[in-house]
Length: 103
Ligand SMILES: [Zn+2]
Ligand SMILES: [Zn+2]
Image (tube, rainbow, N blue to C red; front, side):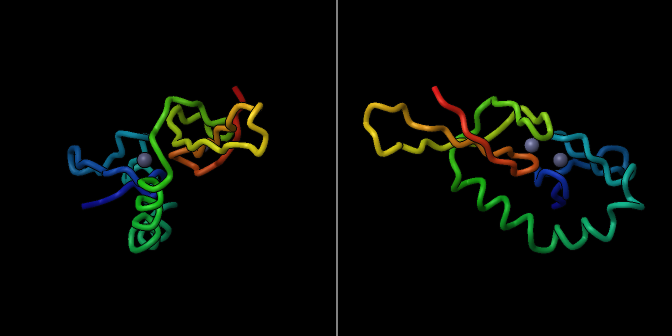
């Protein structure tokens, strides 16, 4: 099983090339630049990142202001004042950028 070094999604072989359906990363196109990096990431970091995603919360269709990815996990953060709406904390599934939104 191979996982995308960019976004951690499962990569499926297609004509002998591993391609990520989530972000379009292909190990054939970027092999020269990414090979050493992806080898290291696959060994350890992706497992941690995938495990973290499960804990963070449900995935929603929110566009990341950093990379334009349209999927993010979110959780609600209740402020101290009961009058205020809870703050939503989004985490991009692709680049892990986090940001807040207020209702
Ligand atoms: Zn990917
Ligand atoms: Zn992002």
